[in-house]
Image (tube, rainbow over all chains, first blue to last red; front, side):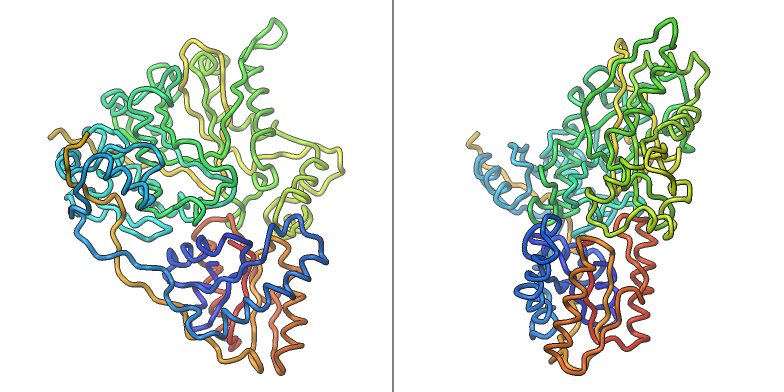
Length: 451
Length: 106
């Protein structure tokens, strides 16, 4: 899609080929790149399960005529995305009862289908008093809709989600984090169902009741903050279900975790990334997985620390799309692995002398699968035409992957894709591995303000 | 719950109008068509069919195949994706390409 947008800027008509249902996301991505009304031609159906003969038939009978029409029909290529009406950010868009407002917001696709707290001007203004930013200051422009986030609309989403006014600085920092080009918000509409989530570090977590302990994603301020993130992704980033937010099975609620710094035996995440321990930060993360949190049991023969390392290595081979995880380099696929480690397991590891970096290095070295398994995943689980030798030739994988079928190969491109967060029930010996494709973590400072 | 209240919009603010796509071609006959491919969704099968159909239906058409342009990588670093896209567009301009077919998805 990006080459088409760049070519259109040079006056070269360009048509993007997609599969059924992806015209909107292609046009939205084009808009994010500065071209409205990108030309798109849809191939009919799920090409992955079509035979070569059926692909040729569908191209000849359907797709080719669509391509020609897009390139040669007057009007095709005109701006077909309605630009939003220009309005003031504090403008009252509706007056009505709670029921009328809730119904209207649902019809506008401004909700997550759950009831909302109506963003009255008074409620929003209470949030604005908790930020140093001017109410109409542009905080960021979010892809894919390329709409501006300002404190007014950021606060409106936070109000709707059920946040409290003093949490406003966290939401603003979250917007700055997902807006950072390194996060890659423009690619989260994939059928994979990429779910953004937030990590909070520093004194703000405790001050704002952001949970780091047992059942943390469901407690304290966490659910409302996660919901605010989800609403911002819909309403400011412009991701709308079945239009350009295409997760095949949908999305769980966006969630928030805080690191339990009091129980963390290592430097907390934000200090690892150059912030002061007394800074408060939000890190935008992503996952497509949730699930089984293995319990760690040490024995006389194998310590709990060693068992934890082996479980982490094993889990890394199970959760992600390995065929994409192995890629590296500038053209390689973006990945982030998050280890959520309960304090007792973290302490066992630290007690055995392991730092966060040593854990990363261990898992990088030991998370391996047989070559034939990786080969199968790439051959039959990828939309790409590449095979492993092609990927080696293109620099997406090193030559160490040119081995025999039963040889073990690494699944991680680098130790650096692993992010370690100590959190969860402080009395449980569990860990959980999350994997997010397309995105990379971005950390921003939270600027607290007492009104 | 029946009290009336006024609410503001949670939507982002429209920045400005952005450029629309370029003008259409009158025909593909006699034109140069560039192929740009990201190795996704069996596009290599599709491009060979486009080539056949273009030559059957549009006399004088020239196709610059996808292996002459840089490969597009869908899930890579955003900055490198943008750089590759600009390189492709510049090459298309230099080679006097009249239209581009690019895919699949991404």
